[in-house]
Image (cartoon, rainbow, N blue to C red):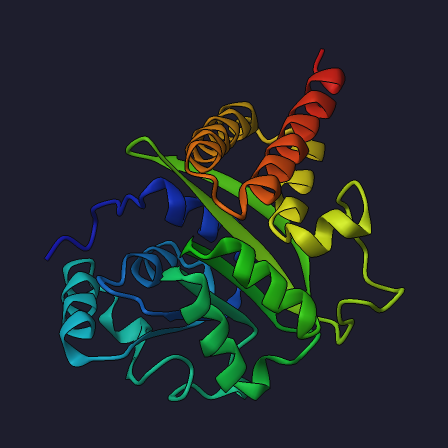
Length: 251
């Protein structure tokens, strides 16, 4: 047992942990090896910690991690899909990290108790980020902040949001993108606008990566005559504009 050792989080989970307030009541959905709950427990950062996973296998690994750091008694372990086995009244912070965007919004959709304005929701989607952003906007969830992490040469986006019951199309919904049309066509641009405005240190490399990837896709589509070529070209132009705006602000 290594109760006196220091647990180190991967960069993406460090970025997630930064959004968790001291003394929060947290559930980590799809906890896998339980690194985040163990980190919170080991450092006394949360008042209540739930580690949830869909099967016993990953949860057994999480229990071993907790036992290794002598914090097993500080974590509640739940075997259940999504948030179905979690008492919402006990939780003020939901973490869903390391899943696809569609899986994430499926979990939120199935848990009606997440529609609470006092609930902080922290998401780290692996894929389908645009689809996730679109679903959030259409279902009354507002993105309050976002951050980048880089790990083993790969970028990760962390999204902090909460339910406000302000759906897409409502005049009260803030759109930090360049215009409403951009927000509707390219929902993930909202994240890029936030990252640009807050001068995220990883943003220059990230936007350049996105531009190069979009350019490769556009080139391939142009050669093949793909019907979606104009849309990809338009997105590439939007990315270049965001990069240009960011560089104007740089000292």
